[in-house]
Amino acid sequence: MTSTPRTSIRPLLPLIFIGGALGTVLRDELERIGSSSGAFPIGIFIANCVGSLLLGYVVGFISAKEVTSPARLRALIGTGFCGGLTTFSTLCAGTVGLAQSDHVQTALLYLATTAIAGLVAAGSGYLVPTFRTNHRRSSTKS
Image (cartoon, rainbow, N blue to C red; front, side, top):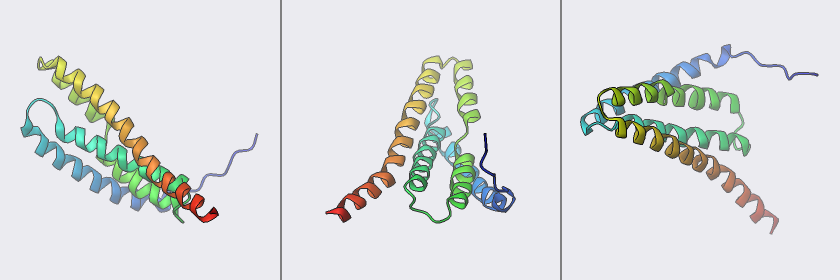
């Protein structure tokens, strides 16, 4: 069995760092804004949904071959920005925190809505560039 050679991640590290820093700062701001809205962590919910939508779009954009440098785009936006913006650990810690403060129903609602909304957002984001590419291809065949 042969494996495809992996390229070094070293040239992509600055892009990952920049994207990650920007995504982390945005997540922190959304968390601060959303923390005043009550028990439901709306700021992190928004961060996870926006990050899922954006990552879905980036993956769809790359798979539709709409970009000349997919590794750089994936490093900056996918791994960096979306990785800093969305975190599974924040979702889990928020859910546990809600449950421990006697907001069990809110914790379950938060967990379920984040998972469902994140999947819908990622799927929707993925479909936009692939639909656009397929539409463009079918219109040039006519």
